[in-house]
Image (cartoon, one colour):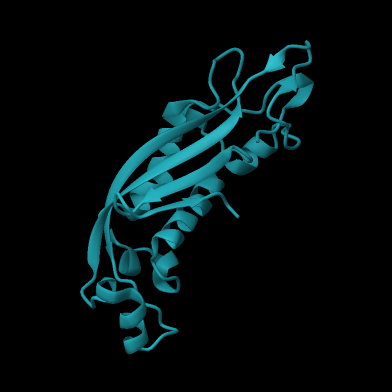
Length: 183
């Protein structure tokens, strides 16, 4: 749910390229809390809410291996995904934001900004990387798709305006999909 700004305006935080707002900056702009699915504007009109999603794809390798388990236990739990040489995936990530549709711009969020946030939070740290060796987060965290989704959520939370991120959906394969909503 999105917060509402002062004077009945939606807090959809639609910064433009030169000054992309961080989560802290968006929060200081008068966003005060969570609103319902449909709210009334100061002028008495109905505010429309929507969800906006964008997809990116990245390639990365990893090895499913927990230091808390023995080699035998790791092999039993993770099977062929515990191969000491690792394996790779062509991940797809769908990021969904939500909020009020700005009556002036007609947008929940500017897609150009969302694209830039996703580049910073997903593509730069993960694309063409060995997750276990190249991404410090996974030095102590097993690089399962669940944990990849959490990592992406946490990165996006640092960049996006507060309260706008709805869910992160990570496709490890066409059949293996994780949805994370920050819970």
